[in-house]
Image (tube, rainbow over all chains, first blue to last red; front, side):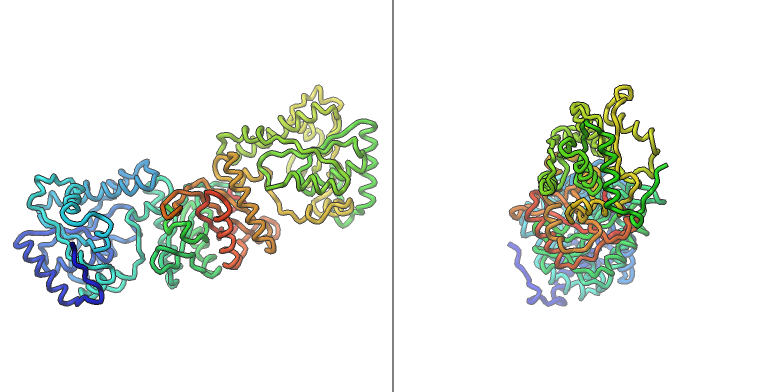
Length: 320
Length: 320
């Protein structure tokens, strides 16, 4: 049974000292490895691990080809300022290959998870010689899964590490007693910049979840460009989450005064408190016009832009 | 060379007298037939023909399965009030069969045109024994095609009437010197009600053009229901054209608190002067909310509704 520490109970300074000591004791004179996504949890765990182990923690950022524009360099730069070296692993070809021909959203998720754990990160762990994995698991992640040893066993299996040889490997989860608000406090105390906390939630399958149908390199690039435009135009807008979705349906457009088929981008912008219910943000038409114009002129192949007007439920936040 | 009569030059009363006399002289004691769509042109020609020939004109309304809800009965009722009997021909199965497996918009148009002329209306003409076809061709229709005999020859060919046996058949086009505004004047003078002129333009392939992908009976029914809801909710809105489009892409929705795939309806509402350029109508969010709510609750299988925010160009008014 994991003992929860609420954000209210949390003394961030003491928490950091305790976890740093525990990590040092566990790793001894060994080395550790962790995968950084740039999100709050993995960023906080990277800072904690770095404070405990310094150069004996290898932090890798895996470029899976389905990220927002400039994401790997952006995350690397944030940590460089904090004195932490982050290694970018270019695994784009491997992920795109795993997504080839996959149209079902569940199978996309599965392909990405498999490629991440079993292939790319699993290989890094096995080759690194590190026996300690630092993970940003928080209490909310544990709530819905089986706690304890079974869960850790599953992680090794996911990584393609045989339970026999897994002997000696250990997973360290210094944030496991916290929930999101607690992690934020710890992250701030560790010096993480505001943009780490302000970034909107992004789904695990990232931009591949924003492509209806097959997520090819070209189609991911289209939705990535639309996402960049969207985030620029909606910068001042207070919304719970915004997203650009590339449809598979082709619609008619005009190119050089001639009918021609093109692509459609759907924009969703959500007002929500806790993501359980959500309503489309009432963006002024001036903003919608600006948004449509920018997407149509800056994203090649797009001839149509729509704005979601359905609430959740019966819609969901993401399209797939 | 066809001599244009502009709406300004037009004396509707005199025009009607002249055309009625010509139709009578041409048909003599024979019979004529015409296909009524409910649009301004075919409605006006039906009234002219009826005035000239009374019961010797057979007016048919072909139900092609891709019409708005209640359309055949609505048109029939309008003419009944004017003392004109309109025969409804149920050709739904034939049209749906021709649309089976067809996803390309051009091929859909072609399938509908072929089914209409060569099969359904062609068969009616051939079996009716009538040698005179009344058509609502207007000058604008002729502008883009080859005028005169070649054009008439094409009509017979389209109808599956061999040019050899076509000898004796004659096409009467009493509106051919007019453009739309002239036809409206004549139609009003003939007693056609305001709703005939107020109805929004509807594309030739009708609701099959509002279905992305295959236009099955079920999918046409879905977009028909959405169209009914849309026209009801937007009744007071001044717009050039409104439409509900059923997408082929499936999106995630919630049913009984569980994730489930559903369909998406895209709403387009256009402001335009002449259809060459158009902008999305700035509908109040209150209206958009009402619209989304009504579509989501009244149209089975729909979990998502979007509103078009792209102008024409680069978009077009219709989606396919």
